[in-house]
Length: 342
Image 1 (cartoon, rainbow, N blue to C red):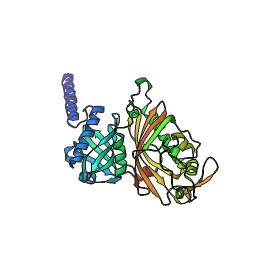
Image 2 (image 1 turned 180 degrees about the horizontal axis):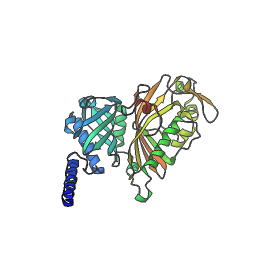
Image 3 (image 1 turned 60 degrees about the vertical axis):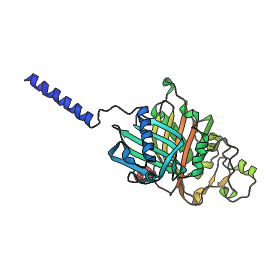
Image 4 (image 1 turned 180 degrees about the vertical axis):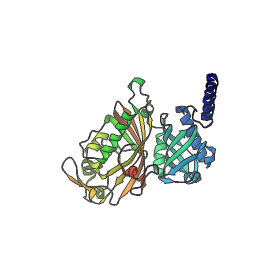
């Protein structure tokens, strides 16, 4: 009798294992090469204007610039080719790969930032941010390839935890939102930032802001460089200036891919500019400044951080002008309005 019961139990376990394999429960995790392969397949299918080429889960969801669409809609109709620039962050633990790349849309250079979620060897989520700015895309392609810092491996014994990397990256967002010049700003001395293909730190060649950006006072170019926010400053000096106060909220902070092997974090989020009374504020040197947009609007962003020994060393962002208060399509309204890191 005991032998018969044991046989039935063994048979049940075998059947359960077979069912798990059938439905993908026991399939191996998607490693780095696997995730990068899904990225290649996604781009191939995109430029072929045919999502059906992909191994899609039945419940697969797709968004473009915060809007949920049917697959084969939006960029799927208009992509015409791949570009020459790509920076990817595979996250084996999360089963996701996020990236920034240039593509061709209606034959014009365009930037695509995206996240692919892979489960049981099928794509379950596709989140895209399309920056339809030809100059920005050309800026990235002129660089030739991403900054080599992103490819520098971190010795296994020195790798921070996933949460430690996220915490450091989130300090960047909190430093912008709470910008009083007195925060803890974890930047290396050689930190640099790239936004839409333009270096916006340590770059004295960028044109200073027009007088109306600082309250309508007529200033010489030298006064503008001395008295207002400047792309010639370092990462840390920009934060210490207090001039980033024009960003009133950094919300829906989603850290969607973490590459511990290289110390890289990829985030999606939104920078709100509330305008109105928020345009006038006191900066750390005691001056009262009026600056920033005169009407409310939001930057939708994808941003990468290279973190080295607890300090941000390289930042790369793509940004898109969007309607004030819009959300990602992947968060509840409450989370979309929150500045909490997720």
